[in-house]
Image 1 (tube, rainbow, N blue to C red):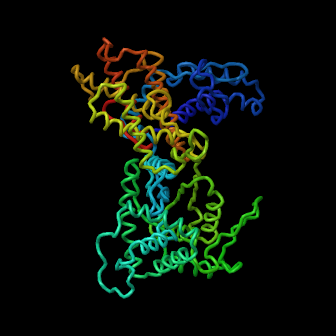
Image 2 (cartoon, one colour):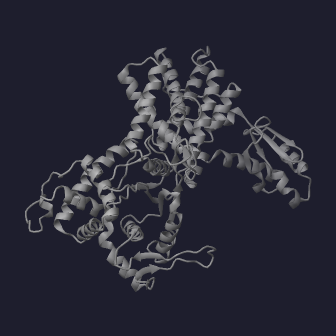
Image 3 (cartoon, rainbow, N blue to C red):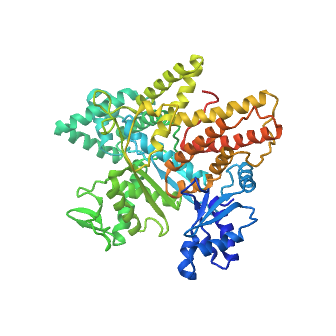
Amino acid sequence: MKKILDLLSEEMGQAFEAAGYEAALGKVTISNRPDLCEYQCNGAMAGAKQYKKAPIMIANDVAAKLEGSKVFKEAVAVAPGFLNLKLSEEYLLSVVKTMAADAKFGMEMPETPKKIIVDYGGANVAKPLHVGHIRSAVIGESIKRICRFVGHDVIGDVHLGDWGLQMGLVITGLNERKPELVYFDENYQGEYPVEAPFTVSELEEIYPAASAKSKEDPEFKAAAMEATFKLQNGERGHRALWKHIMNVSIEDLKKNYGSLNVEFDLWKGESDVHDLIPEMVDYMKAGGYAYISDGALVVDVKEETDTKEMPPCMILKSDGAALYNTTDLATIMERMRLYAPDEMIYLTDKRQALYFEQVFRCAKKTKLVNDDTKLQWLGFGTMNGADGKPFKTRDGGVMRLENLIRDTKEEMFRKIQEGRQMKEDEAKAVADIVAISALKYGDLSNQASKDYVFDIDRFTSFEGDTGPYILYTIVRMKSIMNKFVEQGGSLDNLQLLAAGNESEKALEMQLVQFNTMMQSAYEEIAPHKVCAYIYDLANAFNHFYHETKILGEENEERKQSLIALLQVTCRVLESCIDVLGFEAPERM
């Protein structure tokens, strides 16, 4: 099914043609004066110069051709040449019926689905996730789901930081604490233990201590750099320890990401492309792309149209060491070989704009990607506290992500216990589900590039533009449908009738915007558009609910139609929250 505005524009285009004007003038938009009309067309204004006629004359000609239209029940020409439009309830009903009959509400699927990779994790191994990781995880998961919903083949990659100096720091820190470990015995030839010689808690303690010490103790830092070198060059004991670090860290990361309903298809890291780097470097040298500058290997990425300084992209440092640029470019090379994606989408904080501009230009210039491969970067803002600065704990530290989730669940549990009669275990289960909606919707409802203030009281509110409000609306619909069944009704094969009042029509008008919204959210990489849509849809439903007797409707056919409208509205809302990465409980 085409988008509603396209369908209406086709009808209007035919009327323009019938009146002797270009069909292209028939573009229909949502009215900016909903008190006067539902849709509008300004084509008569645009065609006045071309046809050397007053706009109102053109508008009157077109309006006359729309008399008896099955699409528009009202088409009024208004000075100086606007066409004010109202849909017929019967036509609106036909569109809603088409939506209701389809799993994806009539969305047109692409003829040739794209292969898309979304790179949205970026966590460093051996470090706990903190609040700074929430945005890439939440936004990236939603983008992955939106791309899949509109019909594309999408791979989500966590892209771990697992191969740099932090690995050497952990290994050196562990060596200081437990020098007796067999991993540090260069003469040891046996099998290494299956169990890791540390817990995740010990690992998370080792890294910050080692990092702090390296800044004060040059010898310790040198030892860490030596350990990194040994690891990257295959030293047995260091590789065995690294595998333990990876296993323990990834298990913990999966648990924390999982608590946010964030899942990755690939758990790859920088280490996966280590062996590709020499080949890539040779290729760049042989192709004449890379050259030595001040001892470092670089690729020029400046373009003639640049108005600002664009530094070269460094491939290797003067000591031959790889950088983030190196592993990111090698990752692009590997992805093209393994998956041949049409598009790659990266999420990081917005301070990395220059970095990704360099990397993407380098990948294009050196032909690591095809000419038509799309490389996109989405830079997101920070999550701030009430003081407008990056969110911190009360003692000024960086809050662990699991603690933020725990605090939000506890606040949600408190509110549910205060306001609702529910057993404690059920209240806790519901609070856990609703808290995730509060966190994710609170983040996603903001445009990704903008900073926002984390306000736990507002985010966990059941009123206003919040996740709990959306879920409460869904649960309200489910409750009405359950009561309908309890009263002897069936939810199978219900027939929709034309809207019986203005609030019912307004709800249907909001429903039919779904395809337009979802396509726009995909094209603009904009999950906040999904949030804005479901907030408007929830408001439209709640207005309809307060204006309409649903279960109290005496006409059985009309009652069934109202329940059918609830069904499709609930399905649309649940599909939307699914692409946002959360779900609704059965009751609240």
